[in-house]
Length: 307
Figure 1: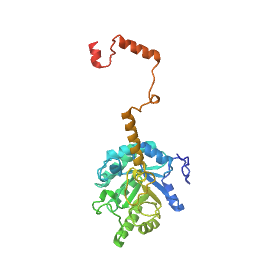
Figure 2: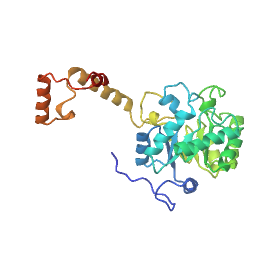
Figure 3: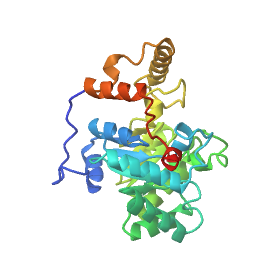
Figure 4: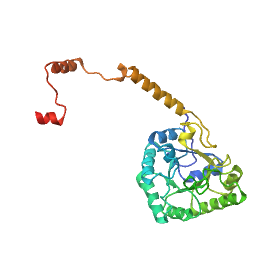
């Protein structure tokens, strides 16, 4: 395991990455690293690896909970996962992804759920998908003192309306719409913006137009940072979206380990003596003597009643 130290920031604090530091990183041309995580071990490992931002993504609905889309993720599920991540990660900013239905109804409902992410789950910020009506939600949440990350391009919660999981901004008209939405989200108070499945030249122009950092996923190297889904980059399964680079292939390794375990159990190879616990000889002798004397030990409530 690498012993590399996490990156140092220009801020006065050596603990949690301060939110304003992200804008400074953009100004310095220092790339921002974001990854998803869904449990305490994932948060701890991302922290140890020097990741800047952890997104507790509603992608958990697919990669953790087994759904076909992100839509089924609930607030209660997202709060449980976010609480777990914040227990494992202390230095990166932890962003709670507001699931479908948690902010679309009204500004008030959006604020109520954003507050839950902060108070109940310990999130540092929340993420909302889309522009348009989302702008008023962003303003309301930011006005309450909760940082908001925006998300445009391919927005999985509305993938059906977009015609599926497809790249966005591939015509001049749609690229212009993304450009306008990005600026509107910055004005509404977003501290950063995810650009998903956006052609790199379009993402580059958006990035240049904003003072807040952009985080790309399938949007090219000109974005101020990048994000990938934990299970995708670690190779829990074959394939995945075009923008995924697998840095490991843990799926086959995990399966092989489980197969070895099953074989050892079935053959009697596991457990060995080193995997068990001892009992003092004198205690074992007393136990054996009691059994030989037919002194049946009291083990259940029924036995107590019988006694």
